Image 1 (tube, rainbow, N blue to C red):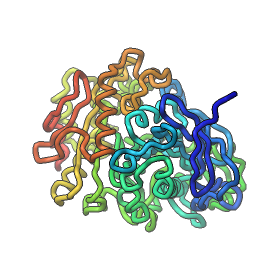
Image 2 (cartoon, helix red, strand yellow):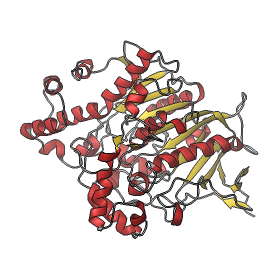
Image 3 (cartoon, one colour):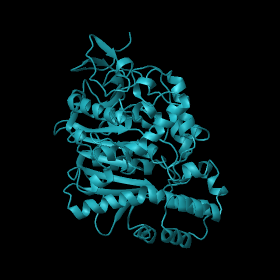
Image 4 (tube, rainbow, N blue to C red):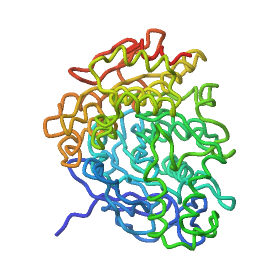
Length: 490
């Protein structure tokens, strides 16, 4: 006789998950109605209650997407689960005879928002398994949201930022439902990486998201959103490729595979440094009423504890496998830096401080800092000046992967944060000998931050303390590479 899985009753209906080693997992749980038919290109609608017990033992459908292009497809596994009901989430929770609460009430909750340039990724990526967080007393929730043109297209006849609205709907579900899993709805930490971190920066500046989380972790993403006129260009380019009007009504009649094909062709040549078509969060006047960087600098979410940082060599994920680091010479480097509006003074300082590095590597270091490190330092400084009552903490991940010479590249820290180094999907990026003690330390810091608001080192101050996770043991460094950071002050 097979033992029945753990069950929980929510306001929407009963769920049956699976149990292993004291951790219950409820997978593929809908938080909104399927965005199909009349609900396609519309704001998420609350999920309809169901009768009986819903099986929640397998990941739900992922948002429509295409795989990463080679060679990234081998480094970043991206499962594709068929089906229309992509607005779903997963919950991992400590479990005895039922949901276990902490002695002082509900357990801290962490909500994961995946990255993938807003066109890739899902909560089903094995690296994001929430078991280790639940093992350590956290209720971990991971979320799917609409991607690409269906999540971030700009239309005259549809709301903007549908993917961001999905995330807000999921956070609302967490607020209303997570107590049934032993979580404390008053202690929610939202965390994400890359496009997920950019989403969180927008949520921090979004009035509809206010009060839905108490803490936030921004990993390798910065506050950024495009004005509507600029963001509309990607939608118009896809419409031109399909030979249809750039309206939601017209796009809803296009076959989804044909739509994905056109989207891939339009976005395939873009890059964060040199531009090109991409899907971005937009300043829509409602969910994102103004530029998130400016809103946060002016004090938005000053009451939210904030942990943020980067990897040391973000650029190597894109520059090394593609050969950019070897192909870029001094002339091309200068042309790209001019096109990206990098200050000449900054370029001189980086070249002088990195005499052994290739022009492509210096270009990558400048790109990493322009897009990520400098904006996050600027935000930390603004919160310090404003006297924000919540904590601000900075980290940097510096352990270097031996795989393909990727070094401390973008996304490398994910297996350490989730403590999933033993999975083959994680090892695709880290190799087989990644240091488990470093993963334990980084994972513990994230757990501590979610539980208490303190990851284990001092808050941001004029000395600019940054907790560095590798190479070697974690250590607090004040003002790393300060000459390069100051070179951007023009």
